[in-house]
Image (cartoon, rainbow, N blue to C red; front, top):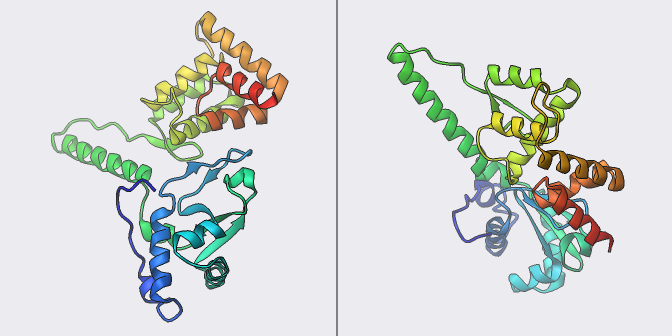
Length: 265
């Protein structure tokens, strides 16, 4: 929670659950909505997974203290809300939550009540702006190129048909889907080096990794990065390497090596 923006209060809190919740409980739930994550954010966990939109980490003690409740009453409230289908609880280890007896709370009504997230809203706005520009060109009788299509695990890699065909012709088939999905994750998680036109991002990193067919030999710097990356994958394994770059937000073998060696020590 960063103190900016606003939240929408679902009618269910005031109508459907009116006879089952006290005014105090409704107030606490509205506060939890403001505390919950509006976007997916990295979670302090060995797996490097994410806190999802509408989730927050707390503990019985912290929850009770924040809302001036006894710990036993706080526990009973959370248990009753879970039975009503208002929240879902998951117990976390201290390593995962950063606090003893941590609890992951998921507000079940959050997604349906808060509307589209910022990243989705930006996509809608961009699509609407593109549509307006296309309409203006059509009215002037100008040729209108087909709109780009969306690819990748997060459906956020925008490529025209020509760009897609060119990438297919330069990237080996067995690496193509993985390259698109990695770009999709990098854009979604805002990794360094994943800004700008999506075609250029894919081409740049394909060249850097030495998997761009019919391209001049990579520079010595890229060749050295590729060699170190291969050494790290051989030493620590592909899964650990991928989890580390997801956690760091950058695919830099030097940074990955420092992180992994510090973890071992």
